Each structure stands twice: as structure tokens, then as C-alpha cells.
Length: 167
Ligand code: FE
Ligand code: FE
Ligand code: MG
Image 1 (tube, rainbow, N blue to C red):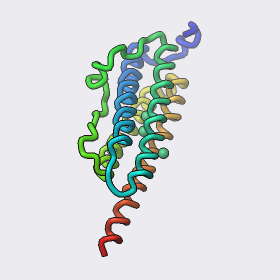
Image 2 (cartoon, rainbow, N blue to C red):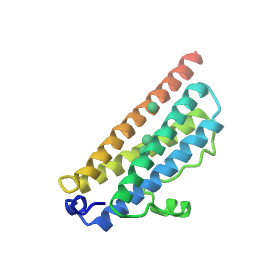
Image 3 (tube, rainbow, N blue to C red):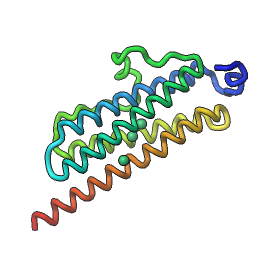
């Protein structure tokens, strides 16, 4: 990154790079969890849910692009080996071992809630200190909030369908 661009970062850049690499690792894990969930899914509303999971997978990948670009701009290195993702990510990877729609929705809702907390943390750490990273975190956070809402509303529809259908 240009020298002036780096000078205006008011927090320790190495610490910031650690936070960014943690977010980067989480995005890849979220991407894979969604991507694979959309393939293995079974049960009612599976086509609608799979379409949403696939869309979210693509959006998680676009978050990884944003975060890696900022890491490189700060002259850091995005985590080089997927082996490190589990250790670095603040959000756990939940394997889609149970392919039932409700199980997949629940595990991805938990993932989004973790992502929301982690981008809130990145915003708190960069507020008034690194406007560029703050703005990126806000852009991503807006989409994570949307993801949580999308999944929770599908979960509600599924519950409604099951409770009405059984009467
Ligand atoms: Fe994301
Ligand atoms: Fe998300
Ligand atoms: Mg969506």
C-alpha cells in the first residue's frame, strides 16, 4: 500500500492483519459450509433453501475477496494454507452431516450470528482509526445481517408448513 495510505491507519497494522486473516479464514469456511449444504440438502422446500444457500456461498466468497484485497493492500499475506483456517477462524465450521433442511438452516443461522459478532468486533476495533477497513467491515456486515434474516425467514416458513400440514 502507498505510504500515506498506511500512515493514516491509527491502529497497529500487525494486529489489524491478524483480525483480517481471522475474518478471511471464516469466510472460506462459511463458503464451503454453504456450498456443500446446497449439494447434500434433503427434505421439504429443499429447492428454495438450496438456492439461498448457493447464493450465500457466492456472497461469502465475495467477502473473502474484499478481505484478501485489504490484507494485501496493508502489505500482509492472506493465510496461505487451508489447514490454518480452523485455528484462525473465530466461527466454527459445522459440517453438513445432517442433510435435513431444518438442520442445515439452523447451523448456517448460527454461523451468520457468529459472523455478525465478528464484523461488529472488527468495526469496533477500527472505528475512527482505519476508515477503509471500517467501511469494508460495514459493507460485509450489512450482508451478514441480510443472510441471517433470509435463513430465519425460511426457517419460519418451514415450521409453518410443517405445523399446518400436519393438521
Ligand atoms: Fe461473509
Ligand atoms: Fe453470511
Ligand atoms: Mg440471500
